[in-house]
Image 1: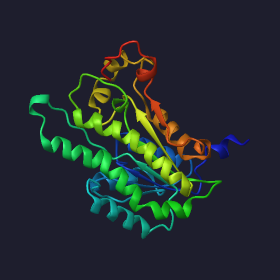
Image 2: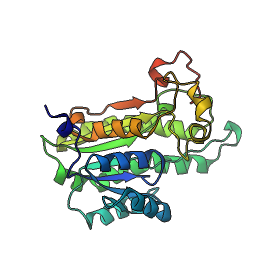
Image 3: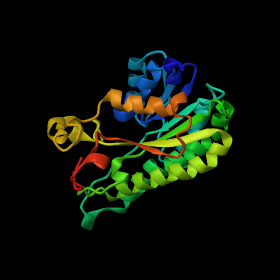
Length: 262
């Protein structure tokens, strides 16, 4: 067994949505270091272009708003003009909304469900034929959905649509895995805990305080996220079908306080 080959992404094409910052950037950078060519997408074209330039020649910017079916299909067409196959799709683009129950608005549901749940389904659908081209029994194509531990357990934050969308995404991962394994496409998910990002500003700006609530005594870093994603995307993760990998320093499985807000 060659450990380097087991975790190599050499020669593979990947798309990472929401790849311009936060968890998406961590994954994109990790994939590049493992040998992949990575296309990143973000609705902010300037941020997408800037990140691609920073990550180097093996990172290509494909800006796109993925909150609609049209946007998902547009990204698939743009990628299809550049590549004839897709080895790895990471559905990471996401949004959150926090507001008290009494005033929580309809748009706080519609926006979050569109980005966090509808987009992963329709982007996977739009890229299905290109994933099939890359897929074979010995080297399946991969779809990795980025969920959250908030889809697995409760906290006191009033992020009703976000938590619901991530719980649904975990179930959708199982649904898609059962269907797409027939095409030699392996679908799995990652449920991150506290990682510093624009979405998780508490972990970004108050990491020392947040760390006291985490069994591992720290927030996640780029190596933690990249390592998990490389494992699932590479040969090492070929037999992981429909599972959700929890990457949270022990909050979900090893905490004694079910109400930990991380």
